[in-house]
Length: 406
Image 1 (tube, rainbow, N blue to C red):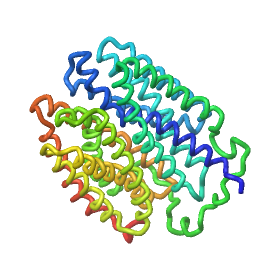
Image 2 (image 1 turned 180 degrees about the horizontal axis):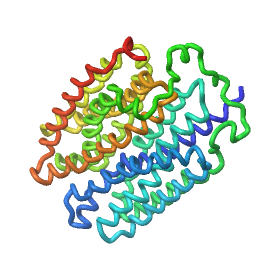
Image 3 (image 1 turned 135 degrees about the vertical axis):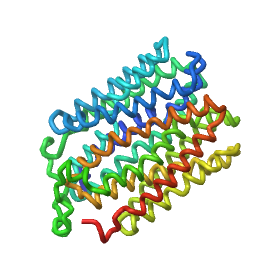
Image 4 (image 1 turned 45 degrees about the vertical axis):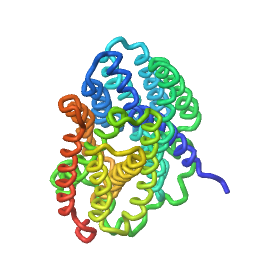
C-alpha cells in the first residue's frame, strides 16, 4: 500500500517542532542557574528572555502566516532552523544577560515562528482535507516528543560541559536536524508538488449543512461571546503553566531535587501532554466541552496546592503528570471549542486573533520568579494561579453547549 506523501511532510513537521519547542520552551529552565550565577542576576531578570520569546510569536505570527501562503514553506522553515541555530551559537559567546534576552526575543523568536508549531499546523492543513484534524493533532505531538527527549539531553550537556559549550553543541544539532530533511521533504501543498490530494479530501455534505464552513469576519468574531470566554478559560491555566515550566528547575533546586531528576520531571510533563492530546481529542466530539475543561483543570489546581509544601521527588513525579495533563488538555480543548463554534473555514482566523491574548501567558515566568525573588518562596505565585484557575473554571460554565452552537 502506497503511503500518502503528506505523512512524510507531517513526520518532518513533528521533527522541527520537537527541536524548536524542546529547546525553546521545555529546556529553558535548565539555563536559569547558570545565567543567574554567570551574570549575577535575579531569576526574574532571566525570565524576561522566555517571556519575550513567547511574545515574539504573537508579534511575528500574523506576518509568518501571511508568508506561509505566498512563499516556499521549505525555504522559510530552513531559514527558521538556520536562524534558530545561529541564535544558540550567539548565546554561547554572550557577555551580558541583556544580549541573551535580545537573542531570545529576536533570533530564537523568529526561528521558532518560522520552524515551530505555526509552520507545522499550516503544513498539515494544506496537505490534508478529510483527515485534517487528525493530521494537525499528529503534528502537535512533535512538541511533546521534544519535551520528552531534549530536557535530559540539555541537563546532561550542562553537567558534562560548561553551559557555553552546551549551547554550541545544540546549535550544530539544531541545524543538522532541521535543515537537510526540511529541504528534501517539505513542499507547500500537494498541488504545488504535483501530487494528488489525499483520498478523503472531499468536504462532507453534513458539514456544509451544519454551517461549519461559514466564513466569519473579524468584527463578527470580536462580537461573539465564545471568543472572549475562550480567553477567560485558557489564559489563567496557560499563565500558570508558563510560570511552572520556566521555573521548574529553580523550584526543584530549592527543595533539593537534582538537575537530572528535574529533567525527568519535564519529560513526565511532556508524556502526559502527549497522552492528554489524544484522550481529550477523542472525547471532544462526544462529551460536553465544559465538563472536559473542568476535568482537565482539576489536576493542575491540585498539583499547585501540593506545591505549597515541600513535596518529595516521587510526589513531584505524580504532580508533573497532573500538570502535563492539564497543559495538553487545554490546548486541545481550545482547538475543539474554536472548531465547534466557528468551523474550519475560520479556524485560522480565530486562532490568529486569540494568539496576541495568549502570549500574555508568557508573563507567568516573570511573575513566578519575581515573587520568589521578593518573598523567598513560590507559594504566593501558586496561590494566585489557583485563584485565577478557579475563576476561569467558573467562566467556562457560560460557554455555549453543543445544542447552542451554530
